[in-house]
Length: 172
Image (cartoon, rainbow, N blue to C red; front, top):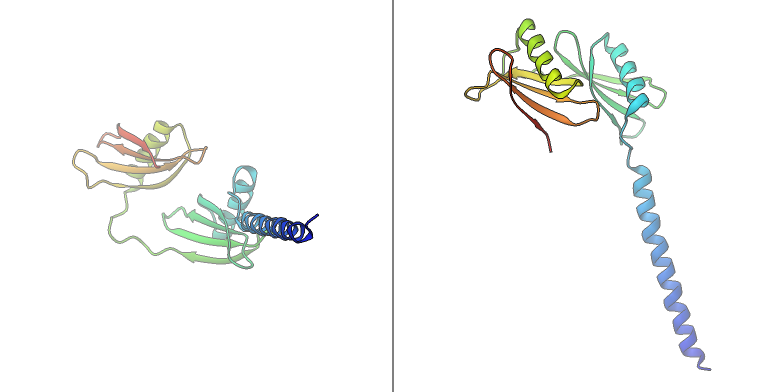
């Protein structure tokens, strides 16, 4: 028997096994560090903690944080229309609250118009959370409303001046 060939095959097989473990371990480590989507009851629990911290409002987005010491990042729209980013630790202790800069490009919708536009858009997509509502610059379109449905699909809804749906498109 040729021992040199046998040793060569052992080295190749051992090297291949080590390489496979290294690649697999790297993939596993990356997957373990990638934060899962926050959904269901966890999303509700985290969102409620953030809303309480800012004194009321609507949760717009909840994400797992990849920053050291942070577990969650939550975006909340307060009753006055302003938005606040809240970071929480794993025990839902508030770490930071930061008001988002106001968008000075578009004038805010009056309350009655906003309420009517939001209701029409929510009805059009079967409910969810309004992310944004504004007057449109597009000809023939009075309002544009962004909605996140319960299944996390985001919709762009265009309305006319009487709050009738002209178009609704799912974001890709």
